[in-house]
Length: 166
Image (cartoon, rainbow, N blue to C red):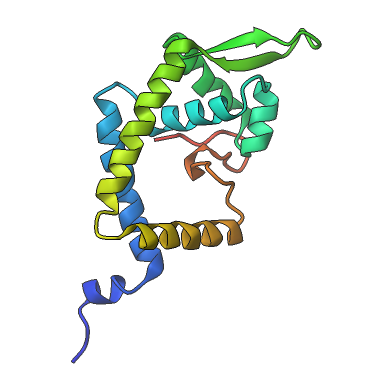
């Protein structure tokens, strides 16, 4: 007896990764939408918190995302009062990036939301299985040359234009 197409797809790692990734992204985006935020805001706040004081250029290089994507995200965070640019004391043409106190508070809330989301997403696994899954996925991502902690929709497209971060 031949397996149904659905059964065949459910045995393919690539299909399962896309299926679960799409589901995880949508459900996390729904949680953040209540706060009028998008997962890209959470990602940039997290990166800023881990590397405060970096220039936009240094952040772009470290994250391997196009400068225009960094500028657009920082512009949005700045308008919301969550991040700020400060003039570089050495290079007056450059700016350093910092979280504001409201940005730090929001990031703490978003971390809790992310933890709840991940707990629900991985509820079928025990702690050891979760750890193993994360380790395996990190290895696969690394072997594919993906930048750790960077959503692929933030990476530049051919021709230098930033991809839309939807």
